[in-house]
Length: 319
Ligand code: ES4
Ligand code: ZN
Image (cartoon, rainbow, N blue to C red; front, side, top):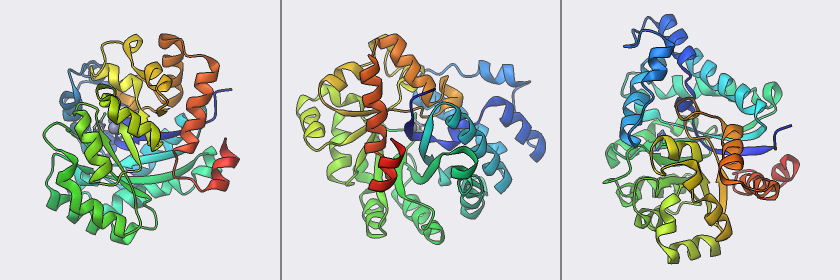
């Protein structure tokens, strides 16, 4: 039995497996520039975050209808459940779809067709977190929040993702203020490829409650002290860090040092179809490569429920 856990850093578009990509391409009459699933998997040789993002955005072309988003999310939830995930907080990137002529209603209604029945079908409770693309403008982020207003009963929070360097959190001050005023929870990717100062800025300027990745906090001891003191959860993604070369090998991952420092770390999968594994695979990988004890693994699983946007009674029931 895999450890019960919550997944807190998961891009639903990053769960698009090559087999499903080809199935949806055929269904929608979309031509993919790859001969077959093997040829597509061959393209998964990333140099860095940007080279991954190029493929990630390209493959989204197959997602067109509500049913496509439903099938994508349902396939993810089935895989997650099989690896012990009991609760999933799911990122989606509306701007990447709006830019292709797929509207907010198609994306949210489609995802909801899978999420709405997930507790019953898969035993996985869910939340939706809408991300702004940080390499798009602040105005575009504000327009996206506006387009989401009819769906706020299904959206728990906002996040910030895509190419980090050169797009500091402060660029999104206004949209995070507006999101907070609407009662939305706030998270942001920071300190994945970007400097520790972006983590500080995400806390101070955007008011985030949780930091996605946050790996590079380890370069700033004063920031580590603050994250420990304020119990700010970090959603780490070890297999992602290896595939995007944020760390050289899994054995070099700072997770053990981060736990020793007292940071509230969680282990997540980011874009599992691209990075070689789902939540349980990430747990297994750090267990093996870093020699984490069973106690440490249980701590990581417990942290995932503490860091989740669950009500107290839900949290206790799950862990
Ligand atoms: C992402 Cl690994 C990662 N980093 C930033 N943005 C993303 N969007 C999807 N995966
Ligand atoms: Zn991410």
